[in-house]
Image 1 (cartoon, rainbow, N blue to C red):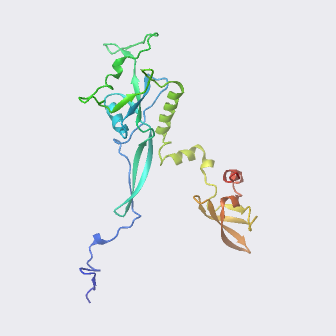
Image 2: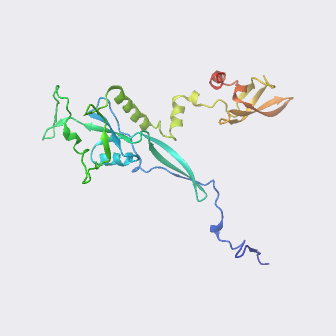
Image 3: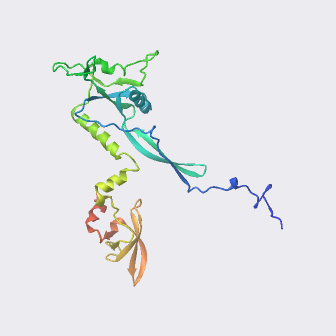
Length: 273
C-alpha cells in the first residue's frame, strides 16, 4: 500500500531531513578568543609607571587600547565580562562579551624616568617637576588630518599640566585591576569566588530535603520537609505531616523557620518599615 501524500508534494516517507524542526534546547557557547580578550595589567602603586586618565572617542576604548599597546605603551580599560543569550535558527546561543566600565576613558601607564643615550636610567633631579616629554611623543602622534593616531582625544589636566593619579586614586586603580584579574567582574566566575570567600553566606536559605517548621499562620509549629524552593518569588513548598500524611503546602520564606540552620533566620526576615 502506497504512502498517502503529505501536502501537495511530499509524503511522510520521503520528506527530506532538513524539513525537521530542530529543538530549541540546543545550546552553543562562544567564549572570547585570546586575541579579543582584554587582560588587565599588573598595576603597582609604588612601581616605575605613572598613571594618567585619557579620554577617547565613544565606543573606541578597545581600539585605542590595542593601538597604544602595539606602540609599546601600557594601557588599561576596566571591563565587565558578561554572557548574552540569544536564539538563532532554533538554537540558544550564548556569547561572551566584555563591556567597558568607564565608557570613553582609558588609563595610561607612562614610564617617565629619564634615559640616557646609552639606554641607562638617569635619576631625576629632586627639584625637577616637569616629566620628560620624550615619553609622550609616541602618544601625541597625529595623522595628516590632525587626529591622534591612537584615538586619544585628551589627557586629563589640572591647571594646564597632566594630572597624574596618586595616593588613594592610584591604590583604587591597582585594586580594581587586581580584582578584575581574579574574576570578580566576570559573570561566570563571580559566584564561585563569592562562595569560596564566604561559604555560609553564599548558601541558599532553604535547600531541598531540609527539615523546617512553620512559624506563623494556620499551620504554625507544624514540622515539614522542603520539597521545592523558588528564590525569585521568595516562596517554597513544604511537605507538612497532617493527620499522619505528608501534605504539600506553599509558604513564603518569612513563614518558615529552618530548624537545621536557625542562625540564618535573621538574614531572611526583612525589617518592617
